[in-house]
Length: 347
Image (cartoon, rainbow, N blue to C red; front, side):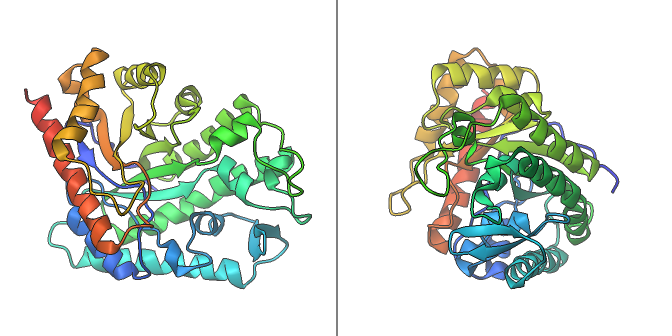
């Protein structure tokens, strides 16, 4: 694939993290693209309610090259040959990409960008099991093979997305929800009596770099690593060559804000999980309150208003637990927050 030209960030934009409610990919795609038109970032929705193979882990595992998986009572397992569960995951992803192509084909002015999500190599190793039922994370060779297999699989994935979205710049979000536990050595073994040894930080950086380099070679113009706020390894994300960091803002420490400010000053993107959606039943926060929650630390850290263009505003969490109408309202609110921050940037 030919790499596309990245777009210089000059205004605050909005996107969501990927998980979406329901089982209808046509409806999901239309809503996402309708709410997140340019300059915002529409995404290929993940619909875990569809069942096995539509979960984030199975979806990413379906991209692995020369590594097959299936489902056991304890979760996804690496196996010798593909079975029905892997076929189901591949079929669901192909369906979603075909629907994306159909919806884009009917649009008068398609968005300039499209985002896809991947489970990162460390969380993938934490979620996949070996033949003996133990997590692949326990074995250095298995971790290495999973990272290499994922890196080998992203070119075909991005090629299919590029065909479905002609001319669109492809943005990739690498999800690492388990990274604090991987670094901290707190993931239990299959017996539950002990925990897996922590993975060395340098190995984590190298695994991310392998996948990021493959994504960039496959044409991705922006690659961010999404992590929870607790013990978030911002330094390793940046050392691996990512273009930015996606993180919820709700629990960030002053030290973490300083790290993020340094990243912004170095030209990196911050995908700020500023809109708290952890409780689907709760009323959404006011636009003005969320704008202030972002603007206050921005100014306190001495970041100029002109650098607000480095921001993408996201929800704090995925939206799979919401109703479709509630999830749609979240997207609307995100674009309103982005507009409010752009007004602040203009003074």
